[in-house]
Length: 305
Image: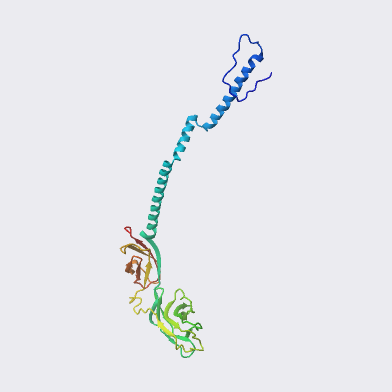
């Protein structure tokens, strides 16, 4: 049996059947066709409405959501949203600045190492008269690692390097601890004093100073930089001090906490640390003890900065 297929064409009127119409399918099939076409049209419209609902319970709910979204994109809403975001960013910036100030200024921490070495007696340096550009060391006593050491004298123990440049140069005479005791040495031009050494003299070497031009070191200037402590370890005439730089504060009335982490040789307590001066950008630590290589942890606090 054949079926009638509808198309999406809506028709508002149907032909009225009369009693005089022939009782034949050709009489009512056209009306059935129009009805099926209307059904197909309405079904397509209903499907479109259902799709437009986008899963909402009704089309009105979907339209309300769209209106709310459109309202949120209005210039007034965008201005309010921008103001809220800017305020949040400003507050976050203020919080970050406060945290940074707390870590970098209001409370500052660090460590400092104080070396405490020098000479108790002797250990003077003179120019050799028996060898070219050599130095002699007089016997004496030095101190390091929290204890005194005997230093044996020696002739021609170290030599002064030549300076072939057009300008003057500087080197340092120092003591270092060898396997057989403390010995004297001279740094090369441009070389730093080794770790653990004791500085004795600074030497200024004029330009073009060599074995040929100045074998007896006549033009060499020896300047003593020895730190002499004749009372070591009982007392120190010139306690070693060191400036500790900090991030600048508004005033120097900050709180300073010190903790001795480690030390070599003699004991070192907190009471052996003095603060003779303090500034907004740092403070000076003074060590009133015989200990060497004193590692100190400090904390600077100024909550009203």
